[in-house]
Image (cartoon, rainbow over all chains, first blue to last red; front, side, top):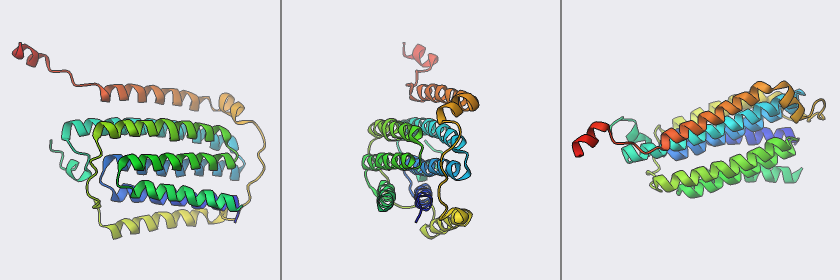
Length: 101
Length: 164
């Protein structure tokens, strides 16, 4: 088994686990954790694609941009979760879906 | 070879535990472990700069933010009942991963070519300047958004007059 195959399996696993968290969990903070998992898979995929296609620097530059964007998404999402908890008193997505305070 | 397989298995194990853990703080710690191992895989792939940034930002900064947010919101996790039926979720995951496997079939077993051409630093600072500007804009947007979201609500002016 080559290194590329191992990394592809990790990418598939991270994307699958992250998607499972997005679909199944009801806690807003756990949804952000699931999103982080999927983005980690995407970062690995970008770097691997750069290596395989011979455009190493393009893949790494895009991966760096994704790391920064992912961090900003996590910051904003967690701040939103804190505000939602203050205003609505819950982080349960099932309760938040009704849009009632 | 075998140690790469072990790192991959431990990475996926950390990811599964991050989703399975009942306490949010424990989930955040498992996520930090996943980030650190992904950084190790990035280093093995020949991207040490991205690995260092992922380790410091993904395993460091984001974990601190998670702990901060969990402390502010509390550990009140709702009961583990899914929003959609579990069989439907498994079907969606099977379709997604199946499509990804089908798209990646030509890559399975491919050997990685040697790295050639510009170094990452030269390529980023000379050819990818738009990425740099985009990241600066993103960081400022994130900082301003965070300040706005975490600011305490000021009481309305009319309310102050009435109370006075």
